[in-house]
Amino acid sequence: MSIQHPLSPIQTGAAVRLVDIRRAWGSAVALGGVSFTVAAGTFCVLLGPSGCGKTTCLRIVAGLDQATGGRVEIGGRDVTALPPAERGVAMVFQSYALFPHLSVAENIVFGLKARSVPAAERGRRLERAVEILGISALLQRRPGQLSGGQQQRVALGRAIVAEAPVCLMDEPLSNLDAQLRADMRREILALQRRLGITMLYVTHDQTEAMGMADQVILLRGGRIEQDAAPADLYATPATRFAASFVGTPPMNLFSLPGETAVVGVRPEDMRLGDAGLPASVIHAEYLGADTILSCDLAGQTCLARLPGRVRLEAGTPVLLDFDRNTLHRFDADTGTRLS
Amino acid sequence: MSTRALEIVATWVLAILWVSPLVYAVWTAFHPSAYATHFSLLAPWTLANFAHAWEAAPFARYFLNTTLLVGVVLVAQFALCTPAAFAFARMTFRGRDTVFALVLLQLMVAPDVLLVANYRTMARLGVVDTIFSIALPYLGSAFGIFLLRQTFRQVPQELDDAARLEGSSLLGRLWRVYVPLARPTYLAYGLVAVSYHWNNFLWPLVITNSVTTRPLTVGLSVFASTDQGIDWSIITAATLMTSGPLLLAFLLFQRQFVASFMRAGIR
Ligand SMILES: Nc1ncnc2c1ncn2[C@@H]1O[C@H](COP(=O)(O)OP(=O)(O)O)[C@@H](O)[C@H]1O
Ligand SMILES: [Mg+2]
Image (cartoon, rainbow over all chains, first blue to last red; front, side, top):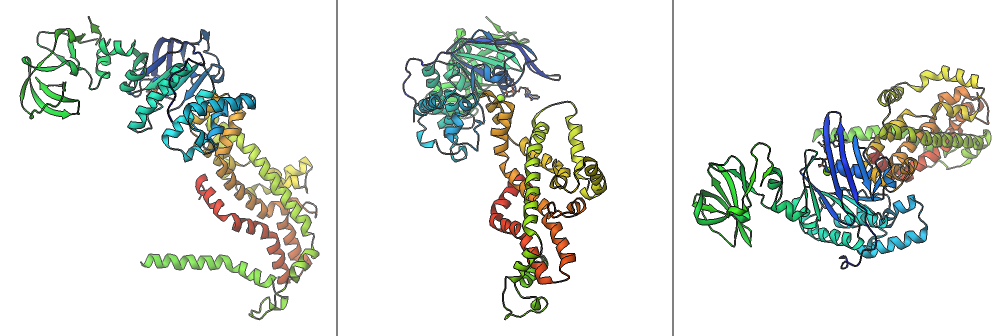
């Protein structure tokens, strides 16, 4: 049931560009001026905590929701005023949005029928999607007779047969269990690579974003906090929020005596040394490959990710050390990065 | 314990009360008239009462009239309530809630109150004593609109969005997504509508006065009051005959109907 190794792309993606997109419901602002560009054929993740406007943003790109201001371009064409069906986008919804009264096969070709694609062509596309997703045994079933993972595949199938240059996904894995989630993550990525489509993928899970994206757009309160490749987002978070949102566990942020800025150190950059900041152990969580040590650093909790197994009783005094060049500094008031 | 026993007794009493006229009708209809008030296990069975009743009045024509009436009402109600319910459920327009409140208000008006007014309207339209005139006051149904609106509102927005994105027009979505998903409601509502209009009496009595338009209920009452004196055997045979199809349908599809009612949220 796994997707074959990436072949040369069969379709080509289209670039997506948002220019100063705004959306408000009455006085409640969901998006306060969002601009970004996703290059054709790349995998872009919209990341952010719940309620930050990810879904709203995606729905505006799809045309399911109308922006109160700004412009959407797909493949260089201004689509702001176009209805969803004419924008060249396919979408996988969070609930999968499968039609319960139709069989799997009918669900997959629903859109092709609505667009009056000839039956022979429908059959060809269905066959291809079924082969890619390995769901030939399910075609005659109803969505209600499928497991979550199978429903997910059918939803992907519907997006594949559309052969649209842009695919939108809204938290497609949030209803799956952890193991299946990891598998589907790889499959979706392989699918995007194989089809060569542009992917705009919404999630609140930063590990998903880090693992899949070519480009991560971190949203917070309807604004873009940072727009960068995963490695850059991790290495040089642009704001305090970006620093605290990315990484498992996230970056330690604390104040040091004699420093006006907030300083940040990734838990994996922390080590126990003979010199350093004096702290006391609160708890040691052994994870197999490493141990997460939480320490009390002058009233602030600080995490250290240490290799192997570290056995330390609560209350043990330790010295937390790190290299100066792993230190991140953020403005205490605005939260922006100080370089 | 005692409340449980009470419940069982009450259930039986109600069931017996409900079924006894039917039992009496069956008894009388299938036996010679001599046994109408005289119960004996040895009484001979007969179908003669049915044959008499069938010949004594144009029941075949009445059946046709009722079937036409119920068919017209049902088709028109589905066709009119569906778009109205969809508009109230999923479209935004100025005054929607006010208009919907007016529709609900109509639920509180008992149809019999409008008997005279409706008759005048029909007279003005010049359609008195037609099957169409029996149906006309019922073609739009506030209850149907309300019920379908509630059902349509429960259709997940994402299904609508998915269909829209896939290129379905407004009517396409209504026809391929909303209507199929509301099937239990259509079935349940259809059942209520059919049984109501099959049994409706007062309005058809007022608006019709000829064999070619009278539905079964009116035909039966005309037959029972004038033609037969009080031959209970023939009257009960006719009654069973006219209510038979509906009763049979209920018994056959009981399970589906109950399931539909549950899913449609009518209890
Ligand atoms: N239809 C709506 N009406 C009013 N407010 C809405 C509506 N949809 C979303 N919002 C608001 O917009 C903000 C962003 O929502 P959403 O885009 O769904 O966030 P996310 O997907 O990131 O969790 C939230 O504060 C939400 O309450
Ligand atoms: Mg969301």
